[in-house]
Image 1: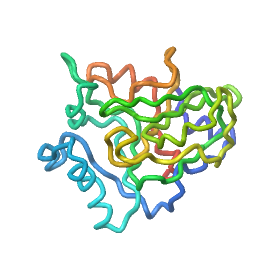
Image 2: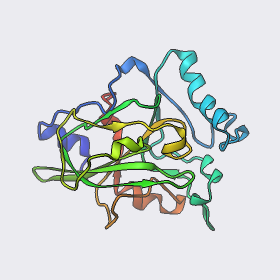
Image 3: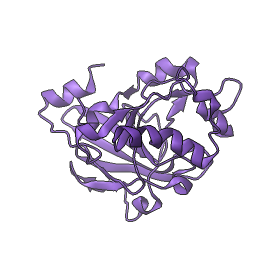
Image 4: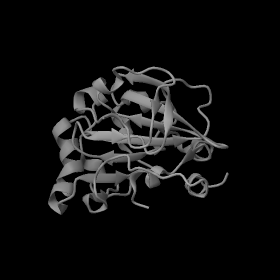
Length: 223
């Protein structure tokens, strides 16, 4: 499958950053199982989890932490949602950690495909999915961990032009038990799903899901 970013560039599509921050405000965050100290945190402790994410940003004078596409993580064990004989621990989107109520924008033109509020411990909370059709280029973008107010006034097929505000980042209690961040995921085929799509998979399933998703980093303006 030809790289999505290359396809859009060849089609002359301008990309608007999904968050309105200059590039110098971003800092990469490693949340993989290899990171030192990653096993010492109580991920169900709001303060401990939030400090683990935001204290390094504050120390570095940054406003947005980013990373996570294709990252093997361990903190999903905090929720039964990801359990099973083989727990889900392989992350399929890009996380952008920033303060609650941060505005989220459409990077390119798209229409509402579906939405939902997945209010289960460790789930997305409010999520919006856009469908994009530009010439022969067809894909979907998913925005998870939004505020509940982001779901107001939605309708199937509603158009968002590039640069239009989609919503805002939710607070810990509404997004659902995560420090404020955007889970951004680019999907080739929704596989019949409505208002939801796996953002984390089993390691044994990673090849399937990596073949059906794209690295969303170019939606940030960082590349």
